[in-house]
Length: 415
Image (tube, rainbow, N blue to C red; front, side, top):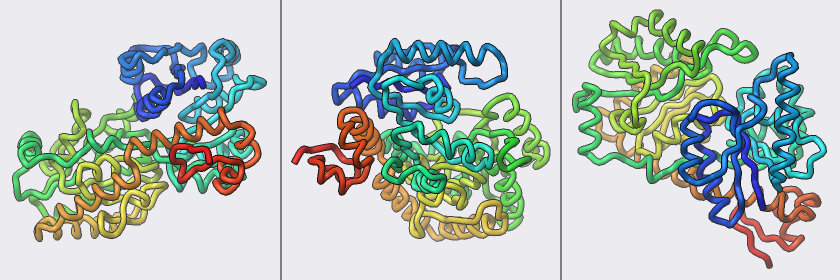
């Protein structure tokens, strides 16, 4: 089959690479449709793999101008010319564009959803209740997002909860020498309890969580002030710049509000070449988000770093009581308490064992290979077994009766 992957970024979205690799390994043809623009990281990675990249006629910006209609019509002609069996799209602007541009085209449509934020807007949720029916399948990046789609009326047999996989070979526990070098680079002593937060700074959204950044930087910085009164010899490493110009402005506001520049207990880095250095230096990772999919907890856990996560979105899926801590979102008191518990285990020498259990959980639930294979299984079913899918959707019992054997979206085998 031929798969066209459409995404509204040429820089982010590197999670698509393992899925495209899996499809090609199975002998399928793939092409990527990216917005016009500069040579971003995703575009470069696709070129390096020899995957054809088409520059979209539409820039995925919906504005009340003639250019929007012209761009959508141009995208429609591109999709018609590519003639894929499956249109596989990520990010909500991509979904809107493809649903409109592909009207009347024979390709099957599969929307993969990286996070629940857009469904937390009452307006968008109302619109999506109708538009999601244009998709043959919604692959939700988490059980949480799958429940949201079922809640707005998408038939359960057309919703597949499959996570965006984590490369557990790339993100692996650091050697003692690597960890020591990273802590030294951040100026962290052996006996210094160190927490990290890896996340872009997103500006407040107009339609969701109005006036608050969704990643919860303000929550962590408030909690950290209180925690350091009791544990002054501790460090917080924040890694991530503003996602865009507004994000940079919001970051500067946070730094001023919390006096980060003059605080020796907080080190806020815009970016590093390798985020693994941050995890390797840390004793615990913190994800205090107001809205999130699985976030940084997957990468941290794969590197053997336990996490403190809020109960927002799909974050609870990344920990269990033995591997990390779950706290209510926007609850500073609970976050301070969790930091104290992690610090106590750091002093007792038991925190690293919790990190090892976190690694086991992430490998079991989120390993990249099985996740990519599951996505490819769904695309094959939708495109190559149309009759079976149209009768049963993704219902396993129905598929087995139809002669298809599927076990948790594992590879197919004919009976």
